[in-house]
Amino acid sequence: MIIGLTGTLGAGKGIIAKFLKKQGFVYLSLSDELREIVKEKKIELTRRNLQDLGNQLREEQGVGVLAKLVREKIENQEYIQAIVDGIRNPAEIIELRKIKDFFLVSVDAPIEIRFKRIAERDRESDPKNWE
Image (cartoon, rainbow, N blue to C red):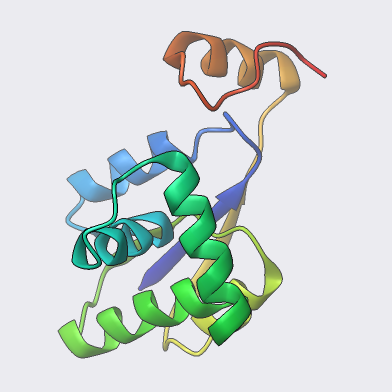
């Protein structure tokens, strides 16, 4: 079973992924694929460089390019149980649905809970207010 996680910011995708990893699922992230490419190209690992490279890859190879890389990894490694995190657009879902036994799970939570989680994790890229 391959489970794709999508949902709102702070909804609990990471909590679900952590639980599934403890159950033996392999964790794969679309953004980790991008980080691997940045390292291979010996580009400085910054948020801006990740965004720029991601945009360039999507422009050159299509919007689902990162999902395609993850799909190929799953198929080549013959993973039976895996979590795919970081799904952000419909083209990625279309690509991942080519995997046998792929299930997409959308995660959400009330905005108050989400904002509390976001504030507690204090990531630089997270919003600082509700708007």
